Image 1 (cartoon, one colour):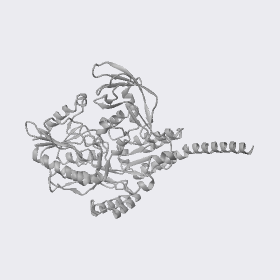
Image 2 (cartoon, helix red, strand yellow; image 1 turned 180 degrees about the vertical axis):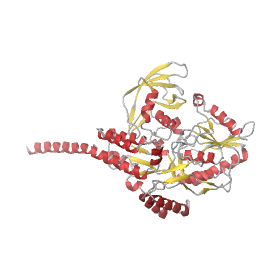
Image 3 (cartoon, helix red, strand yellow; image 1 turned 90 degrees about the vertical axis):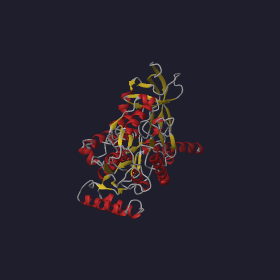
Image 4 (spheres, helix red, strand yellow; image 1 turned 90 degrees about the horizontal axis):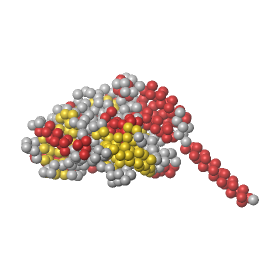
Length: 536
């Protein structure tokens, strides 16, 4: 009798423990609101573009808070809350201001698609899907019998970035790949209506979501597996530098899987077919070559980002070598900065120095001005390497922050970084065109802005993303552990216009066509070659 009683008691006790554990994993309304208020406090104190967004009527912070507070109270699950926060952050239309949900779960379909001149085209697909052979260039018309463009519009609310073109492109990529860190993870069967490029025939393809990764929760096992979830000590000071980080590379990590356009983002490789008679200078750590035309050789140089970390010195030496070769052998240069995801201001300045013949001012910044920023900046100066930029510059920033803070201003006045000087060993002196697109952001906005602003190059392509500030992490939201990156500054085009939500407008507009998409971008190459030679 005693043994039976003990077993029953143990079972009941175990059930009670399990139930309490499960309950403890569900966020209460109070915890959700505390997380929300914690996020709001950081926005109001440290979000650099807040006044700018308000003045441009992009955001009405008080109305936004009221609306989303009501939505949060009505959420029933952790997932509902997570994606409400995601939608709230996306409302700021700032690609640097991002919330990443603490889950590795994702769903994917056996196709990958892209937005090409108003159409959703398949870029890659499994060899056979539902007994039908799909090819690059096939057009996706409907998703579960709904117009595919309506699906794009629904996904946009989780994207929120600097320009509408960029939002559309990102949302299109999310049609067939749904990382739980960005959007809710679907499951079940899917019906795709597709127009085949080869025959013009419209077919219906049935497939299903492939779901992988950890379910959306905060269980101890999940937290252990996700070492990238940073604690307060990880975030607060190591990433403080208020202007150095102009990168959006982490956003592409969420999509994860290797497929055409995403694989090209931040990539040193080229998606543009290399001419057959081209002379290759190098293919690693980036692509550089030149090719013959009737007016002389035209050079091609790929710049995928400005964030090479410990390899920066070696990579820069490769760029210096490539530029030297291009200077000797070409009459004009094409810099391919499409899909550039930014990086470090200092490296960007070094690269820019390879193309100028006189000292110029670096980008102008406005920094958040409050007590916290002042103290953090002071500590940063004390602990940083004095040879990176120079204590005179940082101390100048410190005085500007203090002055603006004591005057009750949210931001400092515009402050110039150190001047950028021409490289003393080598530089390119001939005409240049720079290729940009809506996936070029942050540092990918800054470089073409400098090249255009100082009349060093003509910009070809579409408007850049419009991510006009530097970014750093804040401590994770305490109860949900949602990780947040916050824009701390605003930076400006040399013409004085804010980059945020504006980007860089090309001098010579060009929109990628289905013919480019399906044919190795040969038409694109012919266009920019003609424009580069026209500068001679």
